[in-house]
Image (cartoon, rainbow, N blue to C red; front, side):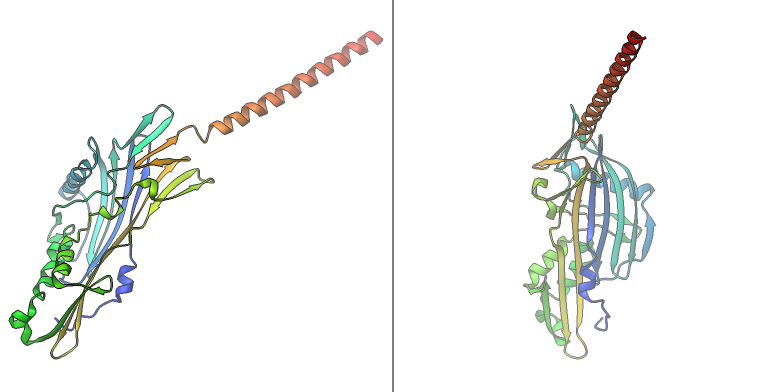
Length: 300
């Protein structure tokens, strides 16, 4: 147990996950790329596609969670993959949120209050619990050493240190944080989208809001035996989010709106002006040509 070989923690923490939401006329397309690392307890090695029962279970879980934030929404067209190996759970999940956007006159309006959803129930594929990773794999190991001085472990262990984001924390706090670690918990992005960083790409006519809440989880438990080398058990998870829409969009709270003809109207006006200008030139040229012909006929 104490001969465990580890990757540098900075490398593990660098693999941030991403949540990308794209607003369309009748739906919002979601693309999740998730990377969670822990070495407290070994996990089954898997490399699977989300189909059949696993896709149905995940669809229901996502739908339940987003409906807690906004009623009347549904999850459709879910696809994805999940891989578990060497302490990593890596997953890509794509789905559509139907009913999250729609037309109001010339405006496309989307309510994104559901974006910081949290799936709180267990999700499994074969022997892997891929959502409640903390409760299943991290918390038991962290809790095992929380009161080591009052157990037989004290005979072989000289010290146990718990760290959260590099700072020492009491054992019970570390254990609780470990137990709450969840793959599909995005509560940290629960900030009004109007406060996210907004950029507008004039070339692509695309507005994007981005938000990086920082580390969701960064835990270490250092166990020093009375003899031999110390071991470090770690857990790391972080994610950032983006919302994008075609056109020059504006956000009010979590509601995003964009004039569906906003980018087209200036072009149409320019076309009208050009057509009017060309027509005037042609009319003037035609008038002068006819007048010249009339003068020539009179002279003859």
